[in-house]
Length: 112
Image 1 (tube, rainbow, N blue to C red):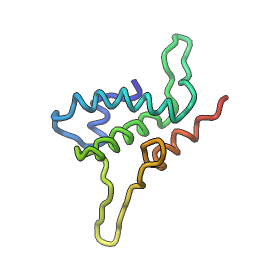
Image 2 (image 1 turned 45 degrees about the horizontal axis):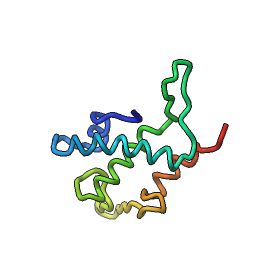
Image 3 (image 1 turned 90 degrees about the horizontal axis):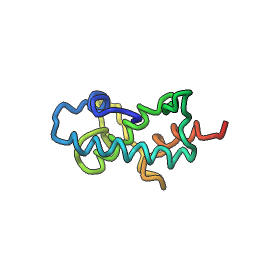
C-alpha cells in the first residue's frame, strides 16, 4: 500500500475512529487513481516489492484528504484565513483532484 490508515490520520490530524473504514477504502482507491494519473506502473525491486516514488505517500494522503473534504468529513481545508494570510486550495482538474496534487504525480511519469 502506498500509505497506511495510521499515517493518513496522523498527517491529516484526524483523531477519531469514525471514518477509519472509509479512509482504509480510500487508500486503495487513491493508489489506483495515482497509477491512472501517473500512467506508468510502479517500479519493483529484486523481490518484486513495489517501490513507490519519492513523495508519493504524502501525495496519496493529500488525495485522501481532498476526497474527505469533498464529502464534508474533514481532511484538508478548502480555504482558511488568519489575519492577513489567506490560503485557498485549487478546484479539481479533469482527474478529479486539484492540479496542485496531480502535478506532483505527473512530474515523475516519464518513462525511464
